Image: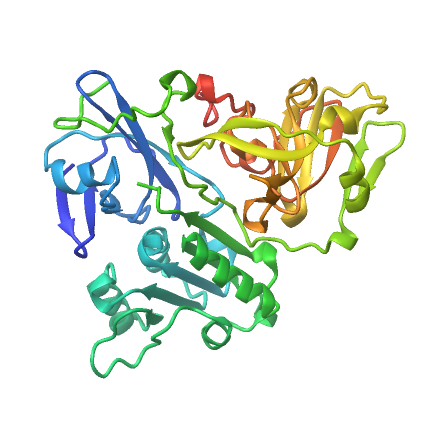
Length: 233
Length: 200
């Protein structure tokens, strides 16, 4: 690990230098394997947050208080320490420009991580595909990559809508509730534009977003999902 | 293998280690993993079909499936995403019952599902008391998120082989990779050999 970056109170990004990395596609994940001195091993999957074009592999890890692996990655692992990875893994929750668009990315909590890889890839290839992003977080302080997303909005006109479900700052002009059908109807491209949709987040979030879009007439086969539960780390 | 400096891990003391395949951890939860939206098929339109390399396709309506003799298998299940869940109990119909009377030379099956999901298995892995079409989990109707109204249960393989929202089996003379198998998962998926991904 080259560097550890604080993202939010609960999430950190591990910046990894991976000699011989064969490359990945935006949206894929890796398996991380930890080995104790007595040979005991624990493995977990983490989405890759960096774009294929980036020089480093970045994993953004949410620290789960009762987790076995994530507290080690965020609290114990230090710069210079080795980390055993396997990957890239997964070939379906992947965005590449030839898949077309319009493109709609919907993330809940740390579900934004693989979407961030897609966003960086989108800008790296200079795509002109219409793009919208919907990001649900508990509060502004829980928004991961806030500065980067703001910069993408200011510099490149990224159309990103936030909903803050628990706590909103004074004067907040974004959404302030869990995603529901009226919210999706406002944010999503109309179903007759046949957008390609990627949804990542906790199970209940993904179910709500996916069912909502299907109810609005979106083609289920154009909706790709990745779900994680409270036991993911 | 490299030692992870300062990593001790959390070994469970309440689970028999001989029941946990390599690289897995035990969870009391039941995580959901699906590649797309959860399908909701009306039971009135639901059928289970056995087709492909058979003399004559055969199918059951929902009512007909429920009328078949059921079994209540209890097994440990192992997901390729590393979680294992012990002593899960189900109710459903053995594939031996459904395949009884089906005359075939096929050696493989491709399970097909609402939502377009598929997964491939050797026929001998779904016969001989190894696989069921289950419609109850822990005494209650199987929830849509977990594959309801009915899913395949093949507990001796990684759980992606236990296809959710299953609608039938296509018997095949030649093996053909299913959905995750095409996206790089192992073709067979034995958790005890840790066959997670292609090449394992």
